[in-house]
Length: 375
Image 1 (cartoon, helix red, strand yellow):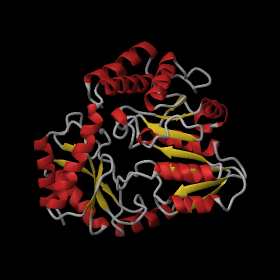
Image 2: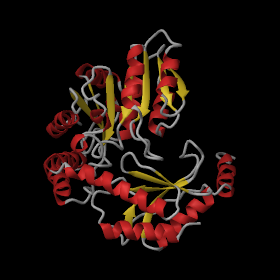
Image 3: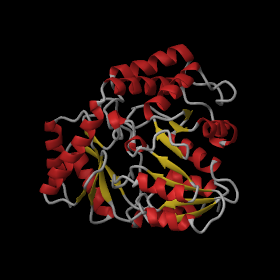
């Protein structure tokens, strides 16, 4: 029977406690949100929603085509210029999602005959980019510049190292300066995904590459998402102008995909301008993460020390992680639940978002609920 194997896979997932379900949320959810990626609390900010509405009224509901046909508006160009300037890079290119941006950067910068050195903890979008690229991929130990150096030493041709800046599971930051040093020893490029760093790390939230002194480097390319700290939708690639020009001509997820909707571009631009005016939001997100970690560990929970705004709390098993998250939800708190295969180390955990707009009372309540619902 066609697709009969799906039933077998479903049964295996059920037995392993790994069944995933969609849970639509209402517009006025009563839950305290520590599950989303809205790090700066901007998704519902009046300036951001008005930016989206104004763009939709001006440019319409959709971009109407690919970026190379009708999908590029003046608004897209404005966003790209301001995003590149804010993060310290020569140019930027906006995509319909951060996932598409990562696929573009990896596939277009790793042609046939090249070597891709990929961190073992990388996000699925970088992993898929490596799979689709025509180069050969070598996966190396997590956050290990020496392993990157050793891998690059085995290849005489074009090469690129690929890494998250802030890893989405435990929230640890990659040793970016050391990675760049290892790449430069071998003339390799460095591509990093700053999805969880933009808006949180660096001066005023300019990102992890800026904090590491790599902004504007000729051998560094950065991808970002507009859907986390900027509270919108979409992604972008930042880097030297010649790299961006190359992506316009070679990146399939740019050439053949419909452009980012104007409303999303307008919201992201409004959020970026707001962050420029209120740079303290980045420091506040980091402070909330540190406070959450301190209180959770004081309660005897195994929480990973955060380098940015992700706080990870280990769970005994996938089944208990699911039950823990469900009990938190029943008590009015939404938390993320990460289980295999989403976690590279196979360890299930709750994943908490340290939002800049959380109050002291909300932080205390969140810790109390998580502690009280522990398996």
